[in-house]
Image 1 (cartoon, protein in one colour):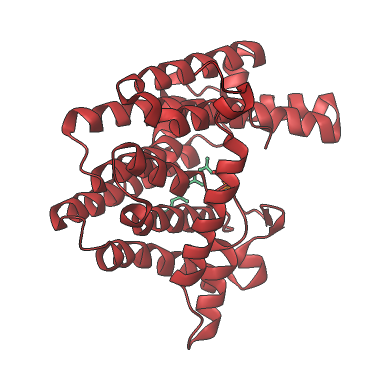
Image 2: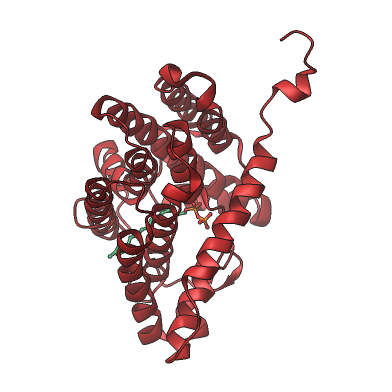
Length: 304
Ligand code: GRG
């Protein structure tokens, strides 16, 4: 429509993300009331409601809508992927893993509560994720779809997903001779697996065909890898900005990352190629794919 102003014709991604973050946060807030024993629910809520981009639940809802479903159908699965993501961050920050004091600009869970409570808060969130999908997904979604979602979530976070990626990551700590293959393994498991489950589960609740699921899988694997490359670049540029050039180089030297293998410019170009490949998978979905296309582009342009 040539009459349309360009601003109206373009999809307003930032407004979209803001609105979706709000509805996801409201659903997450409702999912965990504080009852006896209060401290475990408070600890779970502390990390679950600590901010964060809510990229995974937003992807889940957007995919469901693209495939003809409604937000209500996908909201329990969307909450579940954010619960799983949050539990993986709580455990990742523990002294036995990365031993971090801060996450999203706030003290980590074990710093505010204690290690035992942080471990249990992660366990509580993980268990709730599955219970929530199984009990809260509306009856309009066929039960075999709910079962498929549960299976996908389990696979994405177990040894074939997040857990496996974390094991290889811990193994490669401090080594400077990590191959590209190993680096890809780590990120395909630690990052891409849950992004993929978020997208695919949104599709499944809406009744996506197996051909569509394959497209969604390729879309999400590509954005997953691009996301990690951009994360690595941001790590270096943020450190350089804060502490000076030598600190940025220091990070690049200590840990094998995409920019340490390819350089920053080449890494940016690869991320861009992956985003274009991801968007090509969405072509059959036409106009309805606009949010997923915009989110893919946002991944490479974000600055935090
Ligand atoms: C799953 C049982 C089980 C155990 C966890 C600790 C662990 C095993 C896995 C580590 C997973 C991990 C920390 C992956 C990194 C994922 C990643 C890219 C996090 C950053 O995601 P963003 O940028 O974060 O979406 P926000 O804060 O925006 O949510």
